[in-house]
Structure formats: structure tokens, C-alpha cells
Amino acid sequence: MSDSPVTHAPVGPQEKPILEKLLMTRDKLLLLKQDKSTYVKSQDVLPLYEEIIDQIHNLNDVRGSHLVQNRVDTVLDDCLQLISLFFMAVGRNSEAPGIYAVTSTITRLCEHLKEAAFYSQKDLDSLDHTITKMEDTLSRSHEKYSPYLLTRIQYRLEICRVLLKELREFLSTLSPEMVPIWEKLVAILRSIAALNTRSTYNKKDLEDLRSKLKDIENSMQDGKLPGEDGNVGSGQNLVVPLLQRCQKFCEIVEEKQGKIDERFQETYDKLIEIRNNLDRLTMTQAWSLRETDLFMWQRKLDRIDDSRRDGNFFDAEGRPADLHAQRTLLYLIRRGYAYVYQLLLASEPVSEALLPVYNQLLTLRRCLVEVKKAGGVTSPRELYPYSMKLNSIDNMRVDGKFQVGNDIPEGQGAVQDLLAECYDLAYELRTSAESEQDDED
Image 1 (tube, one colour):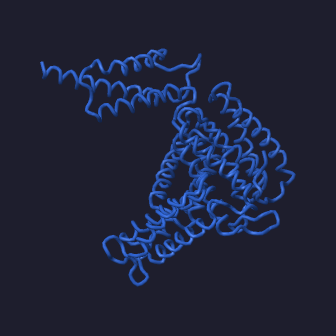
Image 2 (image 1 turned 45 degrees about the vertical axis):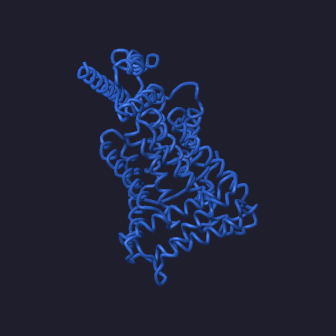
Image 3 (image 1 turned 135 degrees about the horizontal axis):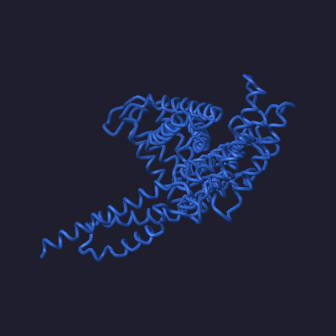
């Protein structure tokens, strides 16, 4: 695989043996990733984790306190990213190695939000919640995992916290009455960007968005936007330029009608392919995703993102992209990272060997919850299909555990809890139906 186009310092002679060993480990990880003939087990992953930790140890001994960024760091990051995704694939999401991959995606997302200068409070709340969970995981891992790994993850989480603080400070000037206006404009700008990348340009949808912008503009008083209560709050330096930005982008999108500058067509096509593949994965991830599949998609995004100079894209002759091409490509990159983040968060703490059973139980629980919301059942007989399915899953256990061959995959606790919850829901529905029948009799 090719590395990121970012320029790095040369690799010194003392680090070359470390680089060679890391390249060998990365090749092993990639081969394991490509093997779909069987599910991944912890015993496949842990020896490779130890190989990586040994090389981090060697690298620290060579460098001491010197700060260097070269190809060794790039390949090491690939190894850590892959091992992190493998920990998730075997159901060990809540352990230190399993959170490394998420820190990479959050860092990219925060950097892009900062660069774009428009985002909602919900975006920040989601990131903050995830970072807090990862900090809790890290605090529980000191006795189990290498300090070399924990230090790296801690450093990455600190970077995420700093970026999140800067993002919150940017929105801090918005008074409460201006927040709904800001959120509405953020949603409209994202809708314009999404419309701009559809396979077919739809003029009516653009006109609907422009009409919403016109309604907001018509509410202006002396060049300022009032809140829903009519008061003009602080933060005009944010909401007014964002309104103008939305209006300008509407004009550009209408002019281009879904056509991008042909100099950047190849990059656009790559990003559309990435977005569409990740979008499909969000629909089917519970049944078809192996977390390591995300590695190549993220690396493709990284390479395109890192090819920018001073924030912009340049063609083969060194000429910068126009505003439309730049915004379109950046939207697709950010959408791609958002999909990766969504898929990482959706990863269940269950080995892929147990996912078929786990997903069946998730579906069964969803059905039972819907039956309960609809008022329950009138007769215990109506619960027979659910009871039969529950019993068939329960009968798969051997000595109280779900086995695959002779293996006992990770995630037994999560599957057992879900099975117990389904039993509780079925019991509650049955007793309720029996009580109603007794009352009628």
C-alpha cells in the first residue's frame, strides 16, 4: 500500500531495522484482514500486538526525547490503526487498543469542523461523549496494556480535547436566542452541499432551500438577525456571514448544476465511490461489516485529504481549485470521515463469530419492543413465534456459552444480556396477556 503524500523527515540508519520489522508486521495484519475464510480470534491478534509494542519500545530507545516524524511513524500508525480495528473485530472494543482507531477519526473530524467554521452543538456533544468514554477505557487499562501504547493514546485524546475546546469557544459568542438560527443555517448549508453531490441535479430542491434562506433574510433588522423571540442577540458576526455563505453557495451550485471542474473529476469520482461504499455499509453494517474493512476507506480519505496544500486542492499543473470544486471535494471528504466515525461507534462489543446470533437477538428485541408499544398481545399464543426463536437460540449454548466449533468467542456477556432481555420482554407480554384473559373470564 502507498503512504500518505505528506513529506516526512528521512529515516536514520538506527531506525531502518525498526521500519523493516514494522513493514513485516503491517503485511501480516493486511493478510489477516484479507482472509475472510474464517473469523478473527484473539489468539490471531495478540502476537501481532506484541510485535508492534516491541518496535515502539525500540523506537523510544533510539529517539529518546527527540521529536521526529518520518516514514517509521506513518507505518507504525498503520499498524496501530489495524490492530485497533482487529481488537474491535474480536469484540474487545472497550480495551485500550480498541480505541486507537477512533482517536484518528475524531482528530480528522475536529480539524475539518474547525476549518469549515460551521457545525452544530450536537456535533460537539457526540464527540465529547465519545472522548469521555475513551478516557474511561484508558483509565481502566493501566495494569493490562503497555505504557508505550497508553501514552500514545493519551496524547491523541489530549489533542482531541484541545480541538474540541477550540470548537466550543468558537460557538461561545452565540447567545441562546441565536443558537436556533445558527443550527438552521448549518442544516441548510449541509443540505445544499449534499444536493450538489447527487447523481442528478434537482432545481426544485435547491429552490426550496433558497426559499428558507429568504425567510431568514426577510427577518433581518438593520442588517442583524433576530432570534425566534424577536430579540437580536450576540453572535451576529457568525450568523450573518453564514447566511451570506449559504446564499452564495446556492448561486454557485445553480450555476454549476452538479458539474465539477474537469481538472478535479478524478478526485471527485474517487470520493463519490468512497462515500457511496461507506453509505452502503451504514445500511448493512450489522450483518456484513468487519471493522478492518474501514482501514482502506479511511486511508484513501487520508491520502486525498493530505494531498491538499494550504487547505486547497491543486491540479497537475499546480493551479488551485475554484471555490465550487474546493467546497464540493471537502464536503465529500468530511462526509466520508463522518461515515467512518458512525460505523466505528456502531461496532458491537461482540466477536464477529457471534454477530449472527447477536443480530438475531437485536432484531427479536426490536420486534418485542414494538409489540409492547402497540399494546401487547391479546393471547399468549401470539407469542409462540418469538418464544420458538428464543428457544432455538438458547439451545445453541453449550454449558451456558455460545461456541463456534471448539472456540468460545469474545462477547459472551453482551449476547447473554441481550438473550435475558428478550426473555424478560416475552415474559412481561405473556403475563400481561394472561392477566387480561383472567379478567375477562
